[in-house]
Length: 269
Ligand SMILES: [Zn+2]
Image (tube, rainbow, N blue to C red; front, top):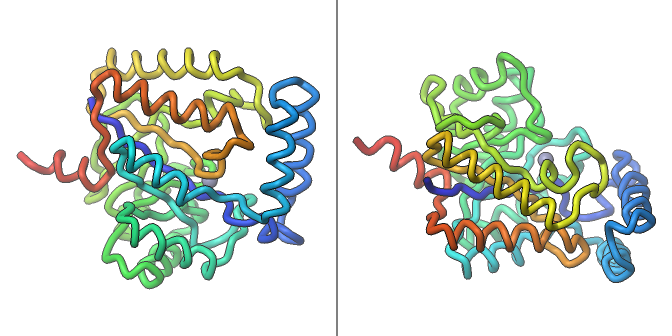
C-alpha cells in the first residue's frame, strides 16, 4: 500500500471573509468553546488571535517544507470560485498557484459546483487558464456530490477526482480516475462536531484503526486529506496529528506518491 496525501485550501486570509460569509463569527465561537472545554490551551488560544491579526489563514509554504523533508509529495486543491464559506478571490488563488508551481507541487481544483455541468466546466476552464496546466484533478469542498457529479467531472475532462470517502481502490469513471480517500483531519479530530471533540491520543487511535482497515481491505492507495490551515501551532492537536500520521506511515514502510504518480502506476501494465 502507498499513501496519497493531499491538502484542501479553504482559506487564504481572514479579511476575504468580511461581509461575505459567516466564517469569522463561527471561528470566534469555536475557539471560545474549545478554550472553555479545555480542548485548547491559552497559548493556542493566543496564537489564534495572532493569526487573526496577521490576516493569515493559510500555511502552504510551511506545509510544503515539512512535506519535502519527509518525502511526501505536496498535492493541493485550490478553489477558483466561491461558496459554502470559501471566499478567496482568483487573484489570491493565483499568487499561491504560482508559488506552488515554483515548489513543484501537484495542483488541482477545490471544487464548488457539484450539480451544474456548465458551472463545473467553467471552474475547470478558469483554473486551466490561470495555472497554465493542460489538465488537472479535483476534490469537492465539503466533499459535496450527487449521483451526477462524478460523471460531470469525467465529461468536463478532469483526469482524477478524490471526493469519495470509502475503502475502495481507485477505479475509472469514463477516462477519469476516482481516488476514494479514507482519512480526513476533521473526521478524526472533530468527529462530526464543529469544534474539537477528540484528544490527540484519541485521534491517533482512530487513525491507526483506519490504516489497519485499509491494510485488511487490501487497498493499494491510502488517501489522507489534511487542510493546510491547520499546519500551525495555533491548532496544536491538528498539526501534531499530521506530523504523527506522516511519521507513523513512514515507520510502517509506506511510500508516499501523488495522484499523477499513482495514475502512472495504475496505467502501466
Ligand atoms: Zn474545503
